[in-house]
Length: 527
Image (cartoon, rainbow, N blue to C red; front, side):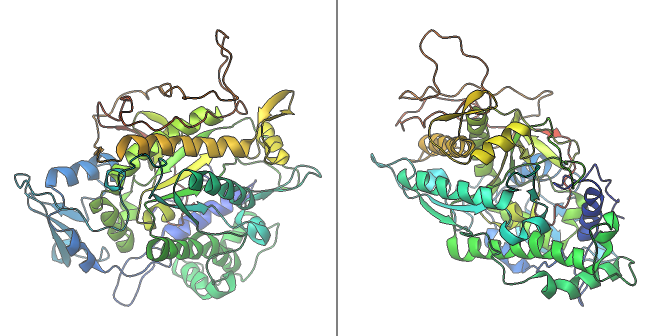
């Protein structure tokens, strides 16, 4: 039985009683959807084509597979009721709803003999850094194909998404619209450095053609299946958490949290086919009375990569299948190193402290307090390295004021001190990190990320390499540099080098991660 999540457990950006409503919706969405053949699928999930796993035969050894399952994708126990790992093969239950596990139909994936010197490359459309063409003096991101996914939708859908709030008579803050502006700025910068960049959306409108009214039948079926025998068709603003038991609410959730993400996944995997996807987001905290929202004290940063699957998630046949495809493609190996570098770079650029999750459904990665593994619909379905970027709390007073100021060059006076553009600091953090990663690891310099034994405390973020030219934010020589704060500005990207200096967890030892606390909210829904 899936436990009902408490309002505190679900990390939602919504006020007051809406928190409980969304928690209830998340619980409903985590429950399985069935089919005539008895599959246990995620909401709107597709029946797995288990034959696709044949392409990964003999591409991974037992030791490599076990290390990934035990130290990154799961806690080492979550997968075991659903898979059996032998020395020469992995056996996976095809349909987890089978009553008798011993007689359940299975798919078998042969494993590579560790004594076999021939290492097979798994089929995949994306390229890790070491497989990109040599630079030979070209810009550092040449030949790299990047998808930028501006999170959420914005526009007329911002209120439905719960990504809209307004303080007094100031213009409303809408996450979907802000991250789209940042996406265009980031696209220009990355293209100047040689990358080919595609935006998954270019306007404040859905990618999917489906709308909530198209999903009302599925919403009703889900509610009835979970014991709501006669669900109300609509809700009113005063319904509180009871609105999660209405067809309207569940159909809205299926629209923007599920159908929209699945359509973006189709575009990324079938049309764009990037080497990397950057999912741009901002964060928020519960702001109390929706009629009179208030500022919060918290302001923080974290970066998410895919991992940390629970048994309940893996019991969904499509989720289990999708995780295995990512694992056999070794997407985690690229995400671990790239995510570590980007998280450190964004910490430098933004000056923000790390966010800490407080439930075991997410894990801290790489002794880096800014980097976490979590299973989301988007970073599971996008079959390439995916980084979810979550800097800044929008309803923090200073962040709110910087967002209201918009984008600008240089610095302007905000809250009594000169501050750089939040938009530019966000972009600088991403650009600096990408340049560092691809300058170090392409031209044949391969790094395979594995895991170290977990430490007992998070490590500190090492200082970045010094930039090769001065930045507007650099203090004069001999000055006493105060701790970096938000608005102090990011550094310029260091010039690419044929022999970049070694860096902890890059060239000395492989990265590790610590288990960390967290509650995922609606993992299967994708936010």
